[in-house]
Every structure is written in C-alpha cells, then in structure tokens.
Image 1 (cartoon, rainbow, N blue to C red):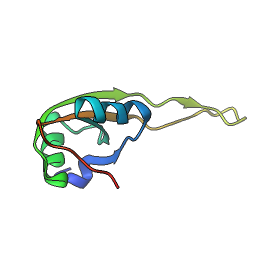
Image 2 (image 1 turned 120 degrees about the horizontal axis):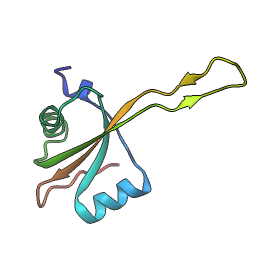
Image 3 (image 1 turned 30 degrees about the vertical axis):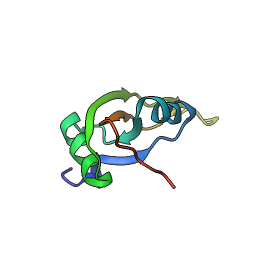
Image 4 (image 1 turned 135 degrees about the horizontal axis):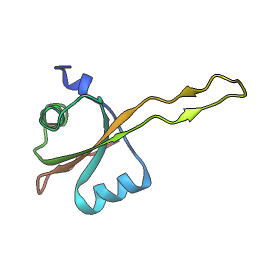
Length: 94
C-alpha cells in the first residue's frame, strides 16, 4: 500500500460532500481501510498536487444483506477521509 492509487479509491460526490467543498474547502474520499492519516495526506498531495491542511477519517462497517435466501451476505467495510486543503487551494472535477 505504498502507491497513492492504492490508498485513494474514489471521491465521494454527494450533496453533503459538495457543500463541504464549496463552503469549507473540504473534499471527501473513499480510502483504503488500513490507510493512515499521513499516508492519505501524502497520496492526495501527490495525486492532485495540492497542499493538505488536515485529514479526518471515519470507519464504516458493512451492512448485512439478505436476498430471499437463508445465508446473509454483507457489504464491504470502508473508510471515509475528509481532506481539508490549505487556503487558496481547490480541486476541480470535470
């Protein structure tokens, strides 16, 4: 897990994430569950060439799912990172 693309999986474009980007200069990413805050910071700075001020992370447990069968499945566990960029920095998504 040394490559930045192994750490940052996707960006989360939801209403709340878009509002955070517009008002607080924060961006939400889905990252590898075992990634640490310094690793996430280095990965974002490498991939987007922006300066990161702080990183906040949250772990999400997968939900149980049943599909009309007795054996229950489960969605994957995942980790969310809210990245705050330095003043004047912005990530453009096109």
